[in-house]
Structure formats: C-alpha cells, structure tokens
Length: 105
Image 1: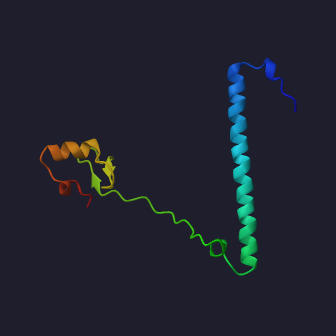
Image 2: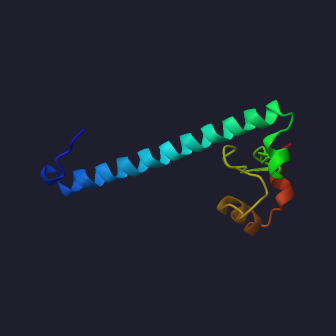
Image 3: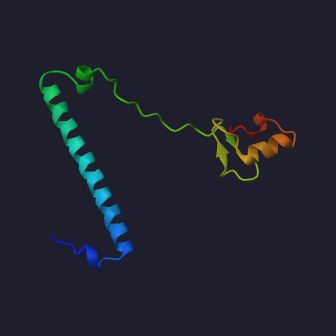
C-alpha cells in the first residue's frame, strides 16, 4: 500500500499520523495481552497462577462509592462524602444547615 504523502494536505497528514499512532498503540496492547494469556495458560498447566510466579498480587477493582448526601432542591445531585464538597453542599452549609440534614435515608 503506497500513499502519496506529497499530495496530502497538512490536516490530512496530521490525521494520518494520529491514526497511525492509535494503530500502533492498539497493536502493542493486543500483543501484550496475547503474551500475558499465553503465560497464564503455561503457569496454569504447571499448577500455578501467573501472580504466584511473578510475586505480584492481582489488582482488585473497587465498586464506586454509594451516594451519602443528596441536594434537597434537586435529588439528582448527590455526593458520596469523599473529595471536595460540591457547591450545593457549600451553599446548604452556609445557609446554616448541617450535613446530617442532607443524608440519604
């Protein structure tokens, strides 16, 4: 497949470059996953898990935190109580109410 780069505009060249970078990243990711799968199968055939052999614990994914507080003016706005307080929480606190009044029951 021969592409005439001289006939392409700058915009087309940049798009081609971006597509090429994505294709290379996807190729590497796919090959890496194939290699990991092959090693896991080989380790399993020997009676081990790959994490046992490498000494790395598997990464555990946590569930998203449940909402703990809700905006009384708009129940669609919630907050888990983690991280920075949303503006609506700040406004309620400034109005003299407590966080307990926002608890979801």
